[in-house]
Length: 145
Image 1 (cartoon, one colour):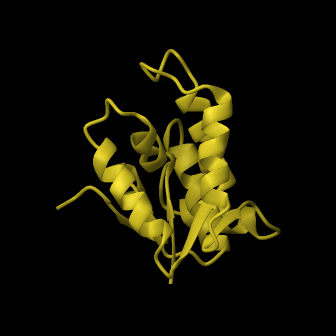
Image 2 (cartoon, helix red, strand yellow):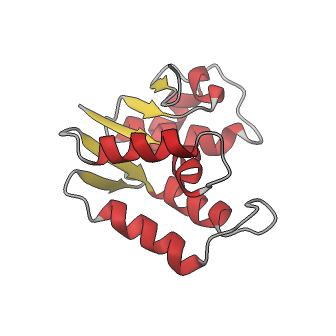
Image 3 (cartoon, helix red, strand yellow):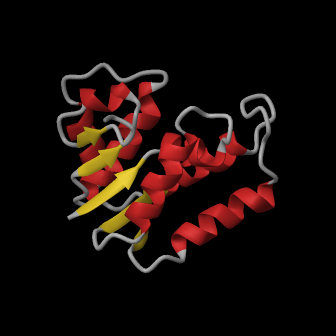
């Protein structure tokens, strides 16, 4: 089985001030060495770069070279795959958003879920409850007891 994480999980792992920091680091280390395919969507990685290096969002922003090094470390793992939009993306986006009003902050969430649907990834780890609005993905909180 394959799974993905959202940007929040990566950000918590990089933000030593986050109450989820240690949990995110432990979770990513365990998942990085598990036999399942660990999928990272390009929008997730770009969101990580944008937020982790932004001084208005992160109290101690990462230098761009450090944030890129973190991504390189993940992408170098043998069970990690980067995913992007393919030929069926728009069709998948329509399926993901059917019956849901998608606007504002829900738009990038729908984007991610559509990429995962297109690639057959059934599970997303995130502590963002908005992902539970999408019936095409199972969303699990990696920090829940």
